Every structure is written in structure tokens, then in C-alpha cells.
Length: 263
Image (cartoon, rainbow, N blue to C red):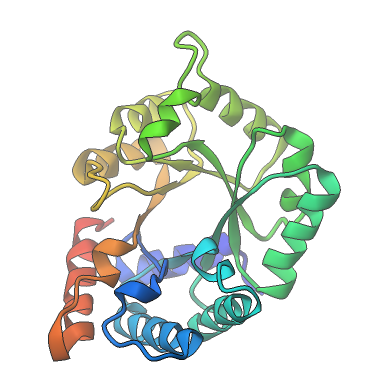
């Protein structure tokens, strides 16, 4: 079975792009809805996947959009991953991070039950909260370092002389081999600093599109000095469609982002 990185490299080469399509599906924004919520969401996801699978190097699914529906949501989440298939890598955006036993169960849920290829985690409960995820050596663990939301500045890049995000990266890199980092496109100058400091880790970069991140500069800096990244676009693709040709429009928008993130 291929590792996350092997799958990703294959699809980055095949698409010539580092576009990650986010399936953060909001029922209230769907072009066609029935009273059967989980069928509406699954049908939408399948249409998006069919429209973009030759354009995306990977998919990211934010679990909160599914977990809100309880058992039905877990069903939707699992079946969406199954529909994507074993070839294209899937990032479960769950931002987990708890004491050892809890993290171990979260990791089993993500990798053994849902069959995701990767997960996002929060590092702020310490290294023992991260270790269970990294036991899955064929997976990619994306540690939140510098997020794209405005509130990230409250803690992540302070104090100025030794910012928390950099301390996280240094400590995680020293302990684990299969670490990537979440790094927002809303602060591309930090991506440049990271690459110029010698860190080549794979980055998951959100924030382009609705959040106003700088795509061109983030793209330029992310690949400096042998680095590599995937750029996630969710709302900018999912809700770009209109009318009877909704999914055709989605495909055209995905092509625009594919070309924006050419490698």
C-alpha cells in the first residue's frame, strides 16, 4: 500500500499542480437539497469529486461539517472518503490533540476506521499528545503551526524573539519524520522565513480565496530551497457553480486554481 507521500507525489506529477480541493460541504449552500440531508451531501460530494478528480493532487475534508450530524455525519464522511478511492490522498482536517490514550483513539478512528491518509493535529498539549498519530509512519501528520485565521496571531507568533510556531516546528521535527505543518497563506512572509531557515517540510496552506491569502507569494515561497506544499481551496471551488451547469462551472473554477498552483 502506498504512503501518503507516494500518493501525493504521483498526483502532483499527474496534475502538474499542488491544488488540494476541500470538501467542507455546507448543506445550506447546496444547489439541490432534499429533506434527506446525508443523501444531498453525498450526492453533492460525488459530483464535485467527479468534476475535479483529475485536477486535484489531494482532497481535504473538515470533519466538523460532518460530525454535526452525528452518526449520519460519520456515515457521510466515511463514504465520501471511500468514493474518492485509494489512489488520491485524503487529509482529514480534524485538528485533534489530547492526552495519550485519547489521541491514540483519535488516530485509530482517522486511519483505521475512516481510512484517511493524513490528519491535522494541534500541538499545544505537548509531544505526548502528538506521538500516537506519528506511530502511523505511512501517514502524513500536519501539525498546526501558523493558521490563516486572524486569531492565530494571539499566540502563534509571540513572543517576537522566539515565536511559539517556530518552537513547535523545531520540537516536532526533532522527534518525528512524517511531519508536515499547517501554514496560512495570509502571512506569506512567514513561509519565506521558514524556507530560508532550512525547513523543507510539506506544508498544507489554507487561506487563499475567501480569506484573502496571497496565492502568488505563498506559492513562490513554499517551494523555495527544496520545499513542497499543497494549497487548499474549499468554498472558492464548492460554491462557484450556478444554474443547470453548476458542476461544469465548478470544474472550470478548479481548473483556474489548478493552473494558479502549477508546479
